[in-house]
Length: 76
Image (cartoon, rainbow, N blue to C red):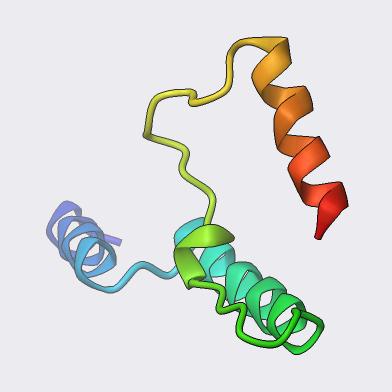
């Protein structure tokens, strides 16, 4: 593969990812669907609720925040 062809594949991948980003999207879609069919009436999940965010800041650094998160999940 030439350098030019490799550069073209990188550009194409930036437009339409063919790697882990797409797999994360697919996994989030499946998780959302399973959660939605088992949700209480009126509860609507968004895809963003299940997508992984590798580039964003860590939102729960404090162990208390993590425990509160799991307490909220157990109440559903």
